[in-house]
Image (cartoon, rainbow, N blue to C red):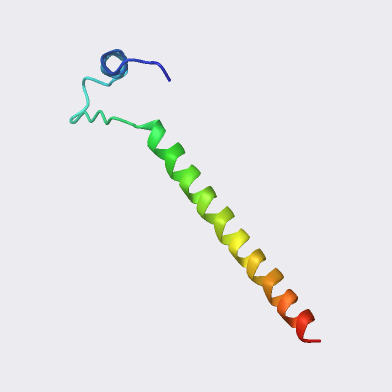
Length: 66
């Protein structure tokens, strides 16, 4: 969201509990989650369309044989 990595690290360090026995600061890539959601959505939509086309084609074949 426009925040520079060094700024985010500085904020995380400033808000950390420095008396804790361990300190972990992880990089979070918010773009990766959004990309996975887009890919999943596209895959589900394409799968649904494939099933729909298959049903329509089956109906056309069945009607043409009647």
